[in-house]
Image 1: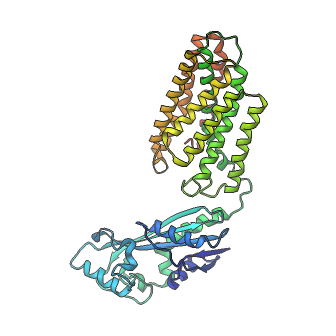
Image 2: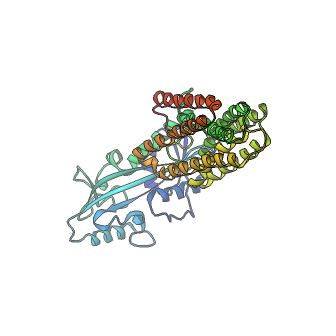
Length: 437
């Protein structure tokens, strides 16, 4: 398999070819790509994007690395190659580093390497590797390049420039990052043979699926409880609207992961477990499901109006990530239930009940969404978010209890809400590894 590498550095290219043995390594100079990022990962992404535009459908790779010295506050850092100024001068960089460390006892340092990949689907991946050591008082060795003559890795007495290529490649920062990169490539290039069922379960967050129809049940119950007189109709419309709400939910999640394909680390699309093409097809099928359910009932025109507003809210939220819009999506789901339940006009009391429930849902989910910021890097927060989202079923059940006490004929909606609660508990117990957030 061919991998295009964004570099014109012959030393670096030899290291990459040695560590990624078994792949055809092709150099492509990212000329004109200015490394203006504040960290190694950002600079690696700038370079790999520059060549990926020329090699669609191929694996592309770029790295950025540098030396970080603790006593110098992390310098040279991203300016390692230009530490002594432009044009780059390795001897001048090494001399300046020794001068700045003169008289200092703390000479701890580490090399850091960030490797950025763009896979054949256009998805970006970033991995990092580090090698810790110390800066020697004088250069030694003739191999390697850059700061290698000054860097002595932990556990050894020789500088990088005194090690053989095999010895250096066994411990270097670039080797460690490239080993991680190889893992990404091998995982995504391997045939799946039906192993991605778990990926689709995570893609659609099926653990939370039972929380969705409950919005519609609560909205329908609010509308019927607020009616001046109720003849017992409308339950069928609520059931159809609840089914449609499931497809709205699945559409929203598919659209969310497609929009975040290049940024949402750990999700099935960015990780390559599900291709963008498959995700787009799934999104289209979910939209088709909404249309099919709405036409089969058929649901009334005002449900379609509320549904279109919900559709807009979903699409805008996925592109702005504003927490209030996420809350509004769940609130509008409540309104859709109300619109499907009542055949005639709405009175003031009905609107009061429906908007009160929708308002509580909006505020609650908006708060949970705001709290979820940073959950991917915080396991406790991620678990808490899943619990808070699941708690929405208890809110739904509480609302159904209240409305059933007001209008006993609504007990079937209460029973349906209880069934959803049981379904949620079963889903969480049977699929503990499927993320709920």
